[in-house]
Length: 100
Image (cartoon, rainbow, N blue to C red; front, side, top):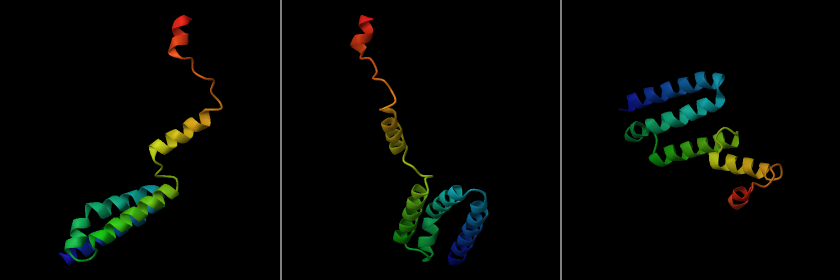
C-alpha cells in the first residue's frame, strides 16, 4: 500500500508541475482535488495524517483566494452591488409604477 501511495504522490507531483506551466490557479485547484481524492490512500499508507491533508487543502484554498482566483461569489456580488450604489438612480417602487 505504501508503494501505491508513493506512486500516487509522484503522479500528483508530475501532474501539478505540468499544469502549473499552463495555468497556475488551475494547477493548485487540481492539486487540492487530487489530495482530497487520494487522502484515504495516503492516510492508510501512513504517509500523511488526515489532519495534515486537511491542513494542506485549507492552505491551498487560502492561497487560491489570495491570488484572486478563488473569490467567494457572494463577496464578488456584494462588492459589485456596492460599486453600483452611487452609479444607479433609485429604482421606482412598485406603488409608483402602478400610478404611472
